[in-house]
Image (cartoon, rainbow, N blue to C red; front, side, top):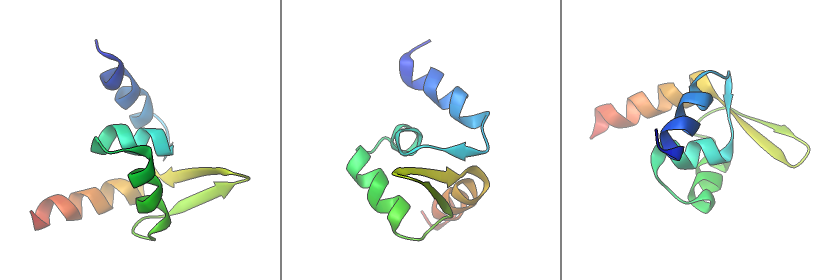
Amino acid sequence: MDNNTSKEKQATQSRTYTISDIATILSVSRTTAYKLANSGLFKTIRIGNMIRISRASFEEWLKTEEMQD
């Protein structure tokens, strides 16, 4: 199993995603993942300098985006 698949499986078991998780899932850079997280398109939680993304909110946003394509 390759590293990205392993990270994706770990991420889906949690109630939140990290910026790295989002970057991996979407196959985008960390910079792009940060921009998305700060855009307000889905719910985020800040803990100090860390950003956590609500899994449910992100997956709902992703589903909506896939429907628009």
